Amino acid sequence: MALSPELLAILVCPACKGDLSYDTAANTLTCPACRLRYKVVDDIPVMLVDEAERL
Image (cartoon, rainbow, N blue to C red; front, side, top):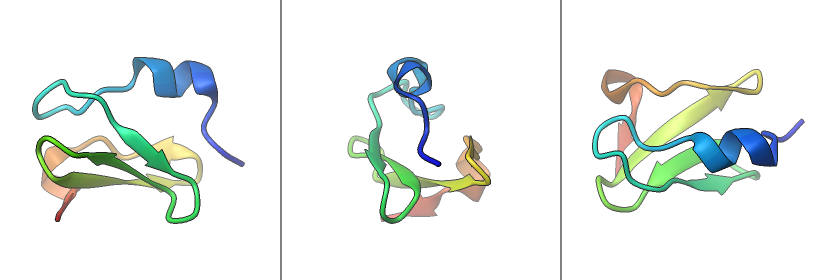
């Protein structure tokens, strides 16, 4: 199941408060400004900077 549009509208990068792009195939949220990728586990975004993958 994908993240709801309502949730995607309010989510921002916790590091810079920038917009995120959602990749449904990879099930990740990416911040192009910070170059951080956040995983979505069991339809719950893991919005922890320490857990994010650096691009």
